[in-house]
Image (cartoon, rainbow, N blue to C red; front, side, top):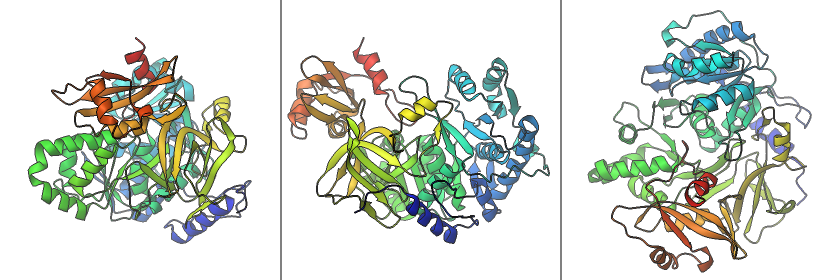
Length: 561
């Protein structure tokens, strides 16, 4: 097979298909590396579903048309403060309800770049985001005015408080047309595990491609209703769980915060809407299982039947999904969770196929239009495997007859534009020929024809005694131990072995598990070189809002003291 030199032909083909299928006409001109594919911004799709309910929240129900008009009105107010079409950064803080969409669309309609904030961000982080983006305007709802006002004042930034939705004036505003799809759409911040967080810039084309690809892959339709419980300053909560339904005309039930009993009420149809799609992180699924055992177990046969017949898709992401959790959820609901893989910098690039036989631990194959490389972990120029999805099937540069593991590199129209105002940091994250370096180690199984993420190369790949060991695979095996409730495996520096394997565990009540006992039990499931040599128990393993563990901080806090 000829060497892949780019994905222009693939993307052209994909957009031809979109032209036939998309409800909003998309202008296409001859596509090459120097030319653009022009697409409509996401808010334009609301016009196709004007009278349909887009969002249910604690304030009631809101149609696509009403949200569009409120956003149009807000865009006029933003334009008075900033002008229009000049791509200023606008930071906004809203609860998980309709106001988030109104403000996001209003910023886009005015031709500016949206930067979503979270109420979980401490004040020093909010100050950092304002200064890092050189933001000209902060927007918040009244409930967050006390939080955001001091930040605006200290940074001499304009502030706009969005009043109750009924107070939006019906301005005759013509918003700034977004004719250039390489204009910045929004900036999402990385979790900042090393140094200060970096602002990841996504263009309107990035957003459109990421959203349209997932809508097709996960078979979104206007008949769908998703239960939304995720933070709205991450890719999972925005691109995966919100932009998909807004693009396709589906409805979103937005919860102000996660609550296991309320989620179960929604999933079982007790709140008025029949949920057809649910997405969450493994921590949420774990808490839902705990709630099931405590409250719903006596009705297990009815619950399994109801969920299997009424919910069509359940997705897990943002953190590794332990096999015991996958199996327990299947036992309760009859659903094999669809795992996928993505990052702030590129949305979702790998996903199990909708109609595939899903297996725990595997994140599937590249989505259409995405190219994948596995490179030598010490040399990105040494390519072990390269493949791409042309929209019909996976194609490899050379025949694959064995398994490969290596550094994961990605290329496609889904990949971000840059780290905001950080050209050197941006350059560092790409190879000379334009592949994004994810920082993760990935494995391709020739037998299963799927990919598996082995973890962050810097913290999840433990180099001990000449072996390269996946901490995530050890965690998956050890979580099956009946006395282990939660676990994080890390590598600690060791003069003899290079690194030694340490397990930080949360034990079930009344457990007396010892290191010797754990090693003896685990020897049936793990090779000797993968067995922990350090065991430490804690009451809880700290995780961020997306259920991720910052292992570098964990090592400092627990083992380096």
